[in-house]
Image (cartoon, helix red, strand yellow):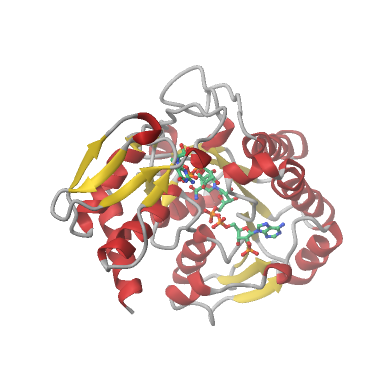
Length: 339
Ligand code: NAP
Ligand code: F7E
């Protein structure tokens, strides 16, 4: 019989890639999406799968809605990808972030407990839970010290997942996932902001890209690689927690340099602090400048993951390199903007 998966947050970056992956594996994919946010299907359309998934109304803030979706759809697997996922917004919206990212997961787990305890559950946890981590790289045994309301909310959901496994015997796994990007990434995240911004300038539209801390570093992988690990977690004999990461960190500055090269610029940095700018050496144009608004309070600069456990137990490792990822994103932005 065809296996049915319910993917919350199917309109998001990971939702789209996971849906495509599950369809390729022969799943019947049901996607949860909020009617209230206008149901933007552009990512599913970009992958050409908008007609192959069935979309249902699913709102993480509403327990009765969650219960009726699960009762009606009877999925074998639930992938909880839905979240208010923008870290900087979580400082302005801490309660909403907690309602969606923390209690949303608890509501789904509660529904599984009441409706059918054999449903497998995946929670999209985050490296933001490490926050001010005492060691680097971070692994499954690194203590959590979140430094954003988003990280705190995700940590609650993570522990609810672990507790549901240990105390209630549910199959509940948690992917502690480091940053993963793609041409389907939202423009509010720094990678896509850079590739889209520089591609626009290269095509004669748009002003310099305004960024915050250029020396912040992240462990950036490719989203499509990561959804495979998520699926493997859900097929394992027993549920567990896994860090997913590349193990390499790069700065926002080096991301800018790689993206600039992909759109035909060569950068030179001038000035310092908030007066620093990047010029294109060929045209002398300023293509990157600093805007203090994008500096994040309270940020620990270096997060980098150790995915040895996922490699050992799931046989997973990310395939795409940083250089290829940046080039792919920049080239795809050029292509879309030309259209
Ligand atoms: P994303 O592109 O921001 O997608 C988030 C999805 O959640 C969207 O489909 C959004 O739907 C939905 N959503 C938001 N609030 C909701 C609510 N109250 N009820 C129902 N749906 C809601 O995020 P992503 O990058 O794909 O990430 C997927 C998951 O992994 C998220 O939980 C994120 O926190 C986590 N994560 C991501 C990364 C990463 O680097 N991408 C790393 C670690 C963890 P609308 O279209 O209606 O807004
Ligand atoms: O920031 C710095 C910023 O917003 C990355 C989410 O998917 O990954 C993502 O969260 C870094 C930070 O991602 C700008 O300070 C500099 O150091 O792209 P981001 P994030 O906050 O790491 C984690 C793992 C998740 O779980 C989240 O859901 O870039 N940065 N200048 C900037 N960031 C932004 N957004 N904009 C700037 O102008």
